[in-house]
Image 1 (cartoon, helix red, strand yellow):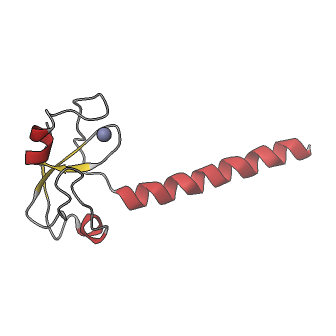
Image 2 (image 1 turned 60 degrees about the vertical axis):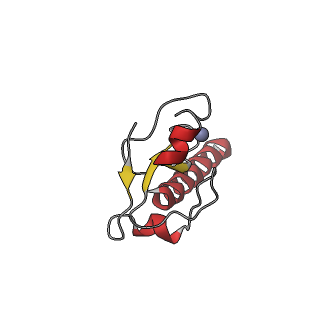
Length: 93
Ligand SMILES: [Zn+2]
């Protein structure tokens, strides 16, 4: 299990998302210890993760590297767009 301690400096983007623990519904704030489900990338309090039996989405895996959610989403969209444009070019020939 990979526990991430939320820091105001390192995880500013995460804090701006104002994520809530899916079990308690409490807002995740600086100093909280969280665990990310490897499947759905949801953030759980360490205590909530233990409460649900340390598994979610049929997996016990958690994320080792703190997910930079917003950045990743934007990058994926950008590359998908590029891929689509490439396909269109091929069709024109
Ligand atoms: Zn999950």
